[in-house]
Length: 114
Ligand code: SF4
Image (tube, rainbow, N blue to C red; front, side, top):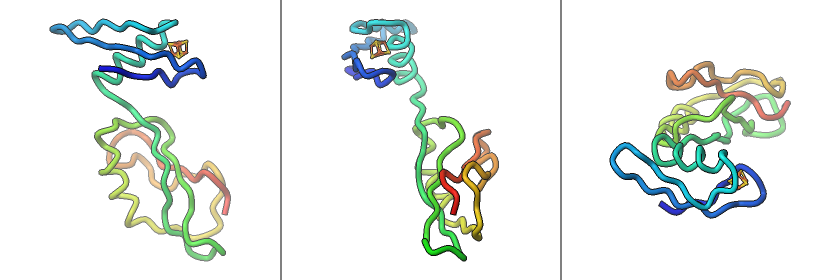
């Protein structure tokens, strides 16, 4: 697998090869690149940003973000769960909008006050 490390602006081009249980990473300048490639090969994680509906505000949608990264494979499930959420203004930045979304142990929080 060819990857570009996203952990710092250097953007090292990584090659990760899996042989049995062992993953060998080359092209990384530091250990963070190796860990990034191993994570991408085994359980890729992502921060999800989206919006939910809001009433009582001049805007129709409130920007939200996951409080921590979630498994990439769960992104659509979480997006689907957010489709049915509607909150009422006022909302403060950092306020929990959905606790433990989809049982992942991660909250959906407001990324701005509205
Ligand atoms: S491997 Fe290290 S130096 Fe290279 S982009 Fe990743 S974090 Fe930066």
